[in-house]
Length: 533
Image 1 (cartoon, rainbow, N blue to C red):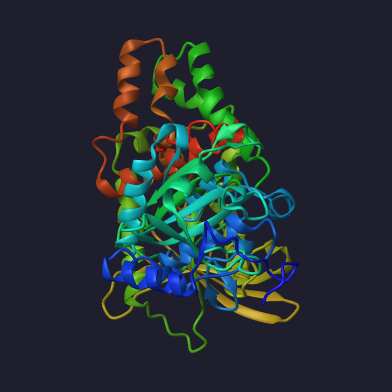
Image 2 (cartoon, one colour):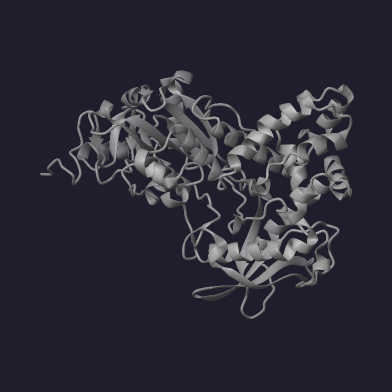
């Protein structure tokens, strides 16, 4: 007989029922017959044990993201892309999570950053009947899953707050199956749903707020951009809740993504959301050029660290082959269509005219995007790409790019494809890297390797600035005093009439910006159900 101690613990039963017991097996069989174990099989395929005592939230999230086949777009080890606890670090330092666990709001942030669609509710914003409906919805589908965060004491278990996915539901007994990620402590077990609700419906001492649940949705089909990865090309390039997780309709970003990796993100998010509206209100702006000048002349020093180009990297073929896979062609075509849509809107024309003016006050800020600096940008991308392909997600400083050029090739009658090609070396040898670059519809001529050939190259400041201005919250412009100008600005930044692809891109950036601002203000714990888009 098992002894209580540091090697596992005896599961208090009742109220829990061990999944592997005779009664647990019977509940499982009956639930399969009633169709409420559909989500179980995907989850059990990716069931994992948390690697640190305080990593229950990270382990649960990684398990569900993998079960949903959401591609992280970054390497885990070797050539493999896979969600691991060590990769869930964009919203809270891992050392801090290891010491104190992760808050509910930061877990929501992580789920967003990982590519899931999320809604969140505390128990005082919902009812047990709502909770039961969501449990039933996910148990009859493999396209969404529930992560419950509860207080173990309600089940007479040792410990306090804990995250674990819900593996299934028994309608007749009204019981939920908890796939406990602390498998070194307790096995999977069935618990009465009413008791699970009570375990969630308590106050989290860390935040002083009621616990609750999070809905994380996505569609059954996801446009994969498996090799896409945010690179450092900027200007210029539980506590107690449950989570319903599913996949997004497509990848979360196509051309651009906002980043909270660099320490300057806090001040930049504040500038965009708080300072810009105040500047527009305090200045007597008369036309669109004035509006752009007010915003761009005040850009923070590290502004280019905030918005990244989502680049696509691959290993250069040793035999010199220049063919693209069908998947690469499709992704590149979508990127170029979004870029085309950016360049066709009126706001883009205003931004382009402003940046081309000799009197533009932001020349020094955007100077690193000038054409003569593109070789440096290209080399930086190749270094980061080499790190990605080597399974190293940290700094690119350990890589040195010996040779870089921008060129295009045309194979089998296809349209020309622009690539950044580089040879990257580090202590263990050298590697040939290519980064596929979407280019505008008008740029169909081949590129050479000389600086004079970089004109019009993507990413460009006018493209990026246009997308970011569109992503600012609608209320940003309300301080403009001239009614006619205000209406003109609203017409330029409105997402209502944008093509679908561009609208999704802008709304994604807008959602990221709002989420990061809420993180900065520590408000992710307050209004969990606030829409991001």
